[in-house]
Length: 399
Image (cartoon, rainbow, N blue to C red):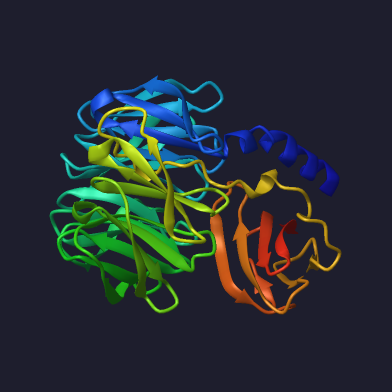
């Protein structure tokens, strides 16, 4: 049975890998999304959408891009195979942030103007329910298993916790002034607070603030590098990107970029960070090895914003069974009933586990060989190991 499953997974996703090096830039004043090839650093096409598009969320499988049109009160659904809009979904007033649940079946949209959350069935592209939110909901993130969603409330200075099974708000976490963007690493959620000039560090197990990290003024967008050891955030009014070391929760360095950087995202291979400079109509490309700007690109339109995940994510299903081939990298037992161990060709490795949607469900920054790992949900997973000898990927079946 395994060869059949493996063949189906690869055949279904081989076309996705071609889209994995693409960014979708929402240019608000152009009412369009520019398609940027990260391989060539050029805009390959422009897609008309609704009025004043400001939010972008790429699906984990790379087949769809969701765009929030702030003044049209709608979501444009782009099919990446044709780079065309295949559906337009009416939502609440002033949609901004978006996020998909763990299964990819529901898209959650924050409506800033109507203080609500629209829940969209991604199969039918229709709103199935509307949830009352706090004052000025902006962006949305999920915990590791997708059972909870976190909504930053710009005007309220809080983060709301939403139970995704019942679609009800369960608690509210006080944070800084004008909270906006979030990046989760494992069970820890990092939140930028624009007026407070710090990042709130939230424990998603207890839904409490662990600490705050002071930054330069006006922190807005936030993303992480591939292994979660660094956070990159934009400081809009001082034209900087701040780099935070997550091991110490301290600022490692700052990087000068263009005029008013706002949205930020990481390339699928982790080698580059893309910071969108809203007032310059440009994108600063940062080399993550040197933390310097290596090039500046055109955004392909006017007033680029693109809050959210605007780069198609890395799809671990589009790799070989073991990459590169090495007999010393293996998973035992495989298939497994839930508990397994990893043999690696080095003393330690950074381990990341993905589900079949390409969503990260576990990250172990320093895994020791043959230490037990437990997965409780049945299905196919992909284990990626980053070691001093290279990067390795292999599938495991939990039955």
